[in-house]
Image 1: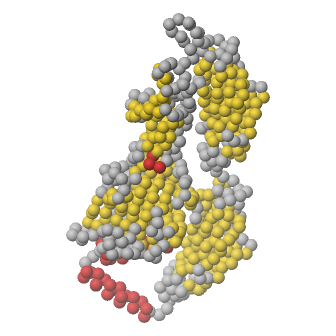
Image 2 (image 1 turned 180 degrees about the horizontal axis):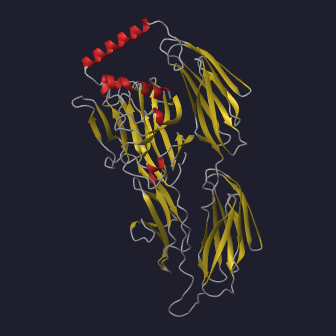
Length: 615
């Protein structure tokens, strides 16, 4: 990004201005003298070191049909000599539909899959060529390398940009099967539920399920499915359909236990599922038992009934969700237990309800929680049996309303008695990262604040709301945004906090914001966290985001891959080496200039072992 590269050019100025006033004056006079001496020199000749070409692509990984945006920058690095340069870019055969071809200064054209450009670049002048191209939908796997060739100094210079294009695959491996109830008398019915789940990144064009009923039961009707086509022939249940990524098809049907079945017979029903390259088997056991009615003081009947918990949805706002269950006829009330283990030895809460659902709000609590429910009736069976437990993964969530939730609180002077600080603190249910105005002593400070929570694996989604403020205490009177500043989301950091991965919102030019994703393997807290040019992976130039507004930024991490979402819009995915070993997460903000920086953050969330949920 332009702002990004400009910050790198200013690093020598930072080191220069950090000295004493006398040194600054002497150095500045020396530089001015050198400058006028250079102007007095006769014009030299163009050399092979005067031209530089840099080519970038918007996505390092993509799918067939995706659109790539290429940017080629050609720069005359000579301080005295102009140069007439030419560029040729032979496009790879995997690219189609070339569009938006443009250059800031020179003449650009496209013919027979070849892009050409020419222009006379003055001293220290550069030109930028941009174009869009679609990846052919006919390929399944290709490493697309696009090379720009530039000449004008007597020697050919090149630069390439690569994109790995491959078809995303589906995965049916987490499909499940359940039965309700899991025991009954001969002659009674069982209801089976088969969940065919695609958890892969790609779709499954055609999936099949075959369920050959065991000999102990007969098909009893009520066959239905949430999507696709289904049918039954004899005692064979079939289903077929297509599944998009993260889509689930649910198939239900009833069976009847044969009345001649022997007491305490256990049998298993298996559904075979295929369509994503492998065969998946989902099994569930059931048992047939025999009860006798003894008309004596004790009557043994098929009581008490047991409710069935429904799948618990993912938590929403404020970590709230609804736990619901099936209705039991005649029940006076339902008792719902919450625990931190499957055996319910650590019961955390108990709810009593007359309806078949309970709203649960956890706020900043997080982790795996388990629930079970029973139906009580005072007149007939008393306390009923507990249902099978269901669990929910509650993400780490912090709305910063509690100043003791574990984030760092600092007001650190940059140098002793400078009266210039970087500040990390809670305020008004938000978290703030601030940089005081203070000249070169404060330039290039980018302190981060790592969350008190670490994801348990290298697959998670981390998100936050963020905003850039101006003219707010303690910076009253600064009624304009900083000229250059970066801040955003740390989605990976090592224990020593010397290697960070961040999604940075950047401001450049006074009132325009863009973003970039980067890795800084040389982070020296609190310096230059979001300004490491060599580690940048992609982004959008200044002007892509509205300044002064709240923005939702999200990163989905899966091993060494990161997917970027901004304000609910998918921006792309990148492979970032070493990311899987750095699962600390948090926030970051920083500046490059004299004006103050005031980044605000709210609703920080980490969802472990899952992808991002897009609003």
